[in-house]
Length: 359
Image 1 (cartoon, one colour):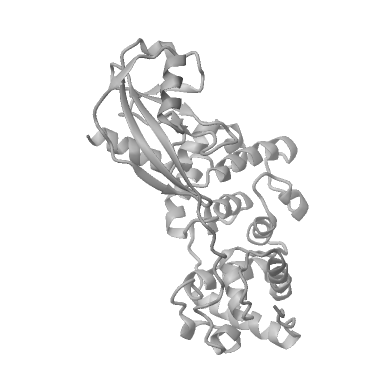
Image 2: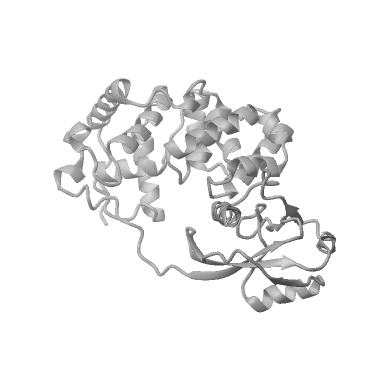
């Protein structure tokens, strides 16, 4: 495609003036991480907001700040504590990276987030846009952001019709974002761009009449707002099947297994998971566990991940052999379903355990 011409100085000045004026009157000024907007609070909020809506994030952010008010507290916490507070928010690699980055900050930066873009990007889980947000919103320094809201706004403003996830399109969008960002007001600009995308230039049913850029928006002028940004090219979503062993001991405790760091739901606790019934039976046999079918019989469930669809089938069993025979593996534990979980539980596992308790 032919990329749009770079905006001239007059257009840049007009866009900056109109957006900042709109934001002063209509922008979001009372988000929890804005009071105070410390580098740490901005960082945590930016990580939580990746792939997640503001209204979903707000209660998680409040609980997280209450337990981990600063970098040292987060760094010294256990991984299970961090994942437990993240349970239900999804994309758990974010929490693991946040925890790892906090420990590195404590070791290398005296528990403070650095101001340099390159040093921020060197931390686990912090990319170019998140680093720019920390600089602009947290440190009050020049910084450029390009999150999903900003990509959508710029794609419509300049009528960029290709999928914004393509590498060359992203490079073009970064150039536009850098050109438009006023260095002396980078924090206000970053928040204004995010607010514009979240409240007016929405993915569906954009509120164009209220937009301060309506007169300059090429997509609006050409009637393309419902077509831009272009969707991700369609591809067949792989499907996987897994059996979840709900194994209860004589006290009604369920067996949970900590998942390997590198795999699905890394570091979280789930019932033992298997690709087939044969694999499940072999796992029991290797540990000398005698079991029998038990109630309740739970319905299969489906859970959509970014890259595949998981079909889960609960298999409920009751233990006939002594419970301590499985405890040689420190990744296993017996969980009292009436108490708080030992660490992070994936959302579909939380729902599965709730269904188990109800029946």
